[in-house]
Length: 279
Image 1: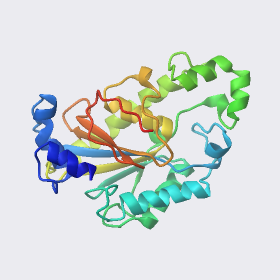
Image 2 (image 1 turned 180 degrees about the horizontal axis):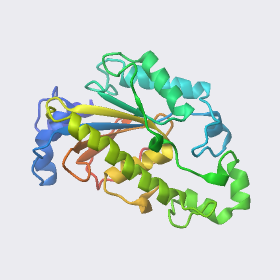
Image 3 (image 1 turned 60 degrees about the vertical axis):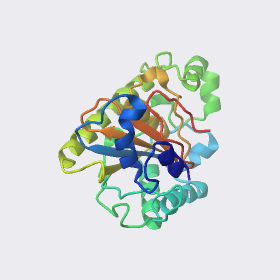
């Protein structure tokens, strides 16, 4: 319903795809003419809940945690609602062409469960590219420890972490948020360079879509950096477990044109400077 409402506001046919609606409305919404380059959609998905999430243990880029039953159910819901092929509000409106995934087990489990519940015409059943740069933030000595222990033994760094103070947070002599943000930028360089070559025959009417299955903190870095925001904006876009954001990005532009939350509830189309946070 929200997509239909948006299309109506933009003066478009409500049956028109989301990507095409964006392509036709860029000038009226932003004052910037549509790019001559092809349009691409990126979906950033966080993994389902893990036992570490549930118990309050810090995971970082360590690989000890596994999905809980709730996390498995969250992933199954993404598969059936987003990629199940229905015409419901949460359904994707075109197939995923490329899948990139974190090497960590919790992300791999999430992708596997999604595929088990998805329409195979909407997401490839195999052949994902496992990209080490999509691992979660490196948290060094914090990994595997409970948040209460860290808060007690390293209160200043923990406060900086919870408040999103990227430059004030130090762990093991490193600045994890700053490092992660730089890595998120490298992820976009890798994936967008590959898509620029593969997408030469794409159009606004038939855009390519890429799914990135990763993590909550890295997801923040990916989304915010795509919108032109630096690491001082950490905590601006928190991802819930199996939360998914959708980004509309032209191949020849430095920052994304538009974005929205797609799951668990789909928001309206937003411009990069609209910093709406998922409740």
